[in-house]
Image (cartoon, rainbow, N blue to C red; front, side, top):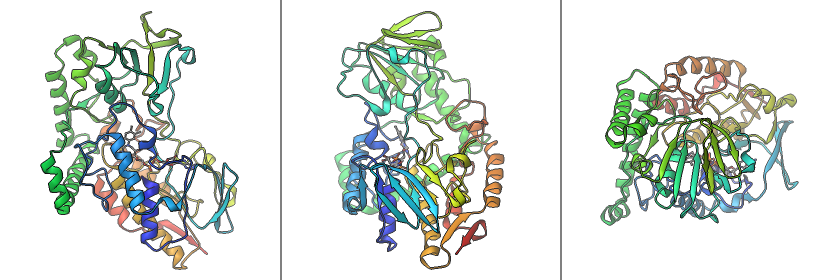
Length: 470
Ligand SMILES: Cc1cc2nc3c(=O)[nH]c(=O)nc-3n(C[C@H](O)[C@H](O)[C@H](O)COP(=O)(O)OP(=O)(O)OC[C@H]3O[C@@H](n4cnc5c(N)ncnc54)[C@H](O)[C@@H]3O)c2cc1C
């Protein structure tokens, strides 16, 4: 998503000499790699698309993953992005020296460039759980981002570890095909009841006929999600209360079995963890062949999963819906900045970047969807579009000859981080749950202000926060 966007925007701004490095043999990132049953975006499709490539063909309010993958590949085709992509080769090293970046790939290819834009993703490296005996499992076992479609779920005894958005989507999609479905739950989740209707042929026809409708819809959804962002960054807001009430009513009204309802009742505030949206999860998990297991997992054995109560849950398939290494940003690529400073060392405690874009002493190295940016239940495409417009303003100074090296100053990063951490304490993410938003200190690693503030920050760089050399 971000790499395709960069190529389009660079060319639009008149930069002809750029390369997109993609280690896989296809574009798509997240949407290429995640193909599990039930995958869809959980942000409305008419918002989860580029603002300059609105799509009248979205089939649903929240469209399936395969459609999103096809959309990205279609946009890349329309904008002739592929001709600028070096496929099937991983960037393993970027080293700065004498005002330029030297890039080395796994295949031994070398390039020298003025600017590096890191668009390497956030939810990219699967995280595997640390469970005794995991590798001894005798059935089929795979991470949700590496779904093995050669293994049929029909009639199988399936276990799923994890209860995030992915697990919820998988449960709803496969429960009726399985012999039994066991969901191993460490933490119950709040579920926002969002229906996901297909667009009617009349609606699709109207979208095709009147592009203005798409623009209005995109703008309207943008406003709604701005309101949502305002709610989650203020734990005491009416919006946060509304989210909580909707989730609570969903649980009370749609889980009839009192024992199951208590198992599914979270003990923390709604939206503290990434809010899950689903119209049918409660119905699915209430099926007679489904079970929620809340006992802790003590180990995996050849025949299944053993829990703390001594029970062995016998399984044919074990799905690890255990998420991603969310602090891996850019790594494992070795990035070496001015004076030999290594990104790995700079980020030894945790990743930090001024406005999530620039790291002091790493000149002309800018990130899309970098650390501590706006994550949560809104469109990362909108985020990346604002960021690339900002980055192009930085790069423009180099093109204009004002400088050969641009990086945020250490003071700017320190001030930004201090303000960010202070604001993060007031967000709903800091109200006492364990989530992937939290860093090693328990501080939400996210943009803690309303989205409008992010938009305003991205409008124009504060040049006093940058060091321009050369
Ligand atoms: C299951 C799932 C559902 C999601 N749903 C939503 C949603 O509803 N709304 C939303 O806003 N976001 C959602 N996301 C987040 C999603 O990751 C982003 O929206 C978006 O797709 C990220 O795009 P990206 O280009 O930044 O990163 P990625 O999609 O991760 O792409 C990064 C690309 O860089 C390549 N790459 C990485 N390192 C190197 C290297 N060293 N050399 C060469 N190539 C490299 C990778 O192969 C990959 O193709 C979801 C994520 C997941 C996993």
